[in-house]
Image (cartoon, rainbow, N blue to C red; front, top):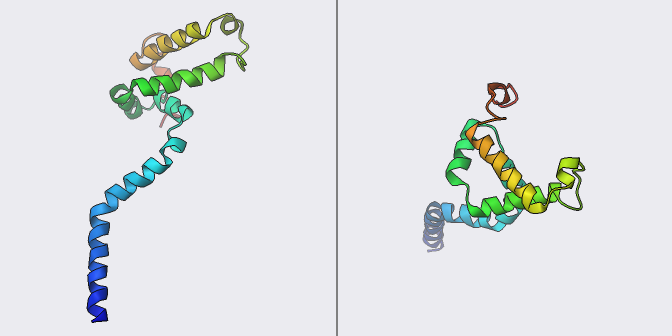
Length: 126
């Protein structure tokens, strides 16, 4: 009797593991998502020069991602500012963010100053 009961429990566990593995994975991801998907990670993803990552960015970049990237740009360039370049020091935060998005568009489209093949075809990329 006890063996039959154990077999039933074991079979239920196997079925549960088979059916729920994906759900369990998603649950664990959601639990850690805020620590993994922070602003700097999103900016790194968006600014990656690897072709397959750039295609992914072009396909999946959302407003939430743009907001996260703008926060990183503000932290890097606005007061208190680690960037003391004179051109940046006299710009407003809105100007800095606008300049970044213009440069990001050039980056994504590989136009000037990102049009040079040497910027993309280096050993470091692969």
